[in-house]
Length: 132
Length: 132
DNA sequence: TAACGCTATGTAATAATATAACATTTACAT
DNA sequence: ATGTAAATGTTATATTATTACATAGCGTTA
Image 1: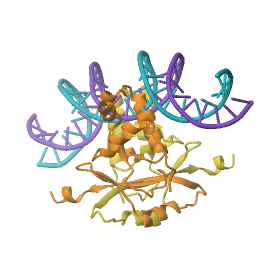
Image 2 (image 1 turned 180 degrees about the horizontal axis):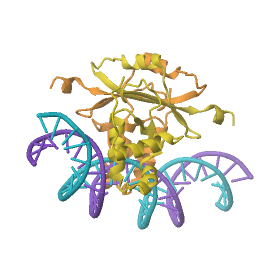
Image 3 (image 1 turned 135 degrees about the horizontal axis):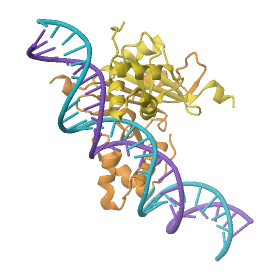
Image 4 (image 1 turned 180 degrees about the vertical axis):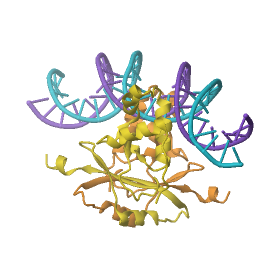
């Protein structure tokens, strides 16, 4: 279980926006949407994003440069993330599968490297787009 | 086995550079390095990169915005990639593990989505950095 | 060969994403 | 009240990637 954390003003504004969004949000789209609340500069957004990622409230979808609220209450603070991404409608959802996360968290290869974090992105067509 | 493909002039120049590099290369570092060979504009680099990715000669390390030559002769043309990344020295290597790729290629969750591609990035400390 | 389609190239401009550097303020434990 | 860590504000700039348009090469086939 992750430590409860009080969000600062900017962090809260930005988290709320991302959390309400049905799809991953881009940094500059976030910026545009929070300008009326007084957040005027990219850096203010990126700082909040960094912190929110650090405490596990959001994740970055690396292949899309976009940010999504954590949909997985048991996720190990951003250390073990998996997403499914529809290449047609760009719908993204977080995969919560304990077998998968157990498999990957315990994965070790011949390099002798100990992994403390991973990110996995699956791509395909979602049900809707497949049937079109 | 992937179809043998003749590379065009720019594609060859850029692939050779990436292939010789001991570490992933950034697009603008590639650009800088090939300017003496007549490749002057970012777009020329990005076009070659896109093509090289498409035919599976290189991969993009999404979390680093960097490009690496495919180290895995049996990789399914960029459709199934896994990397280990040292967060200290930034060394990156491609993971070639048939159990892992089989597991992930066959992975299916409850969404009913059929995945045709995935990318996995592991993070940790490599042997050298761990012992420091 | 000429016309076509496809891939690749060249070039300029600009869009989109992200960080550096510096000054100030807030929260809060001692 | 003072020290300290976290957060904020602001300007400028760095880095990554794409749009738009024009041209060239190359194989197919009419």
